[in-house]
Image 1 (cartoon, rainbow, N blue to C red):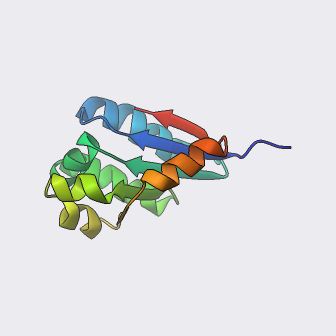
Image 2 (tube, rainbow, N blue to C red):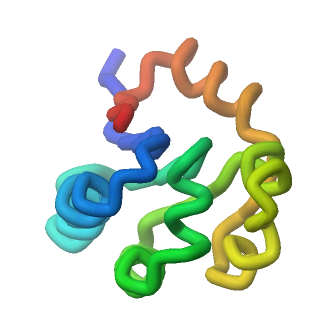
Length: 114
């Protein structure tokens, strides 16, 4: 059986340098270069606050979405951090992602966690 060529980036860091220089750069370049059939970013924890507050990261998100990167954010985290509206406004799907992440892991997809 051929392994899925879907990439899931579980983005948990609130560090702006790592978020810009690794998470967003790799996701955007992977989508532009068709390195993966599908590139997905799951925003969870501290990254939700960073996304809501950092304009550079917001600009990178716009570019990523334009190039077909799929994004979702943990609803619980967004609500607890008080940033759900800001994240939703950026075009990110805010939803419960715990069961989805479990399924992704159990199915053996490639998951990069930062």
